[in-house]
Image (tube, rainbow, N blue to C red; front, side, top):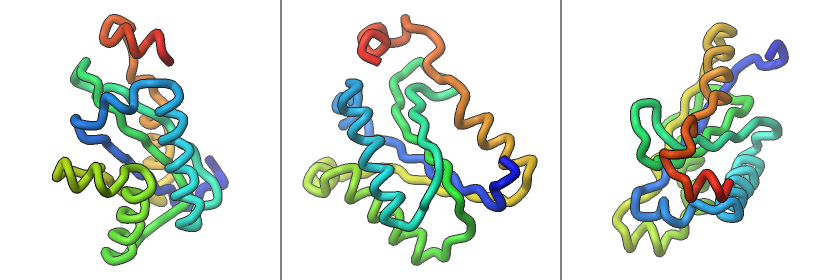
Length: 141
């Protein structure tokens, strides 16, 4: 953590209509790999990606990837460019256009050591706390 001067966090949430397709170990691994390649293409050289499967207040399957990278402020145009590239890499445009929905992508950054520590702790926490929430998914992963 002492090596991190400014930490950026990407959160990529999948639309309900495609969540059925990110429920297997193979598909989850594939999506993670696509995000890694997208982030490398955008110039991020190191980081960490973690899947969260459920929200804090719900037992409904809500898959989203959290990526922590070295990063900081992005101009609005650059932020949009990076979001567009991530969307193109993770969800086929024909599917997004057909659904009329796309990946929801959020970006935050901080240089505060206290906030960096909190973000790392938050991202690395488990979110699949009870197998009964989704026994099929629990058996798969």
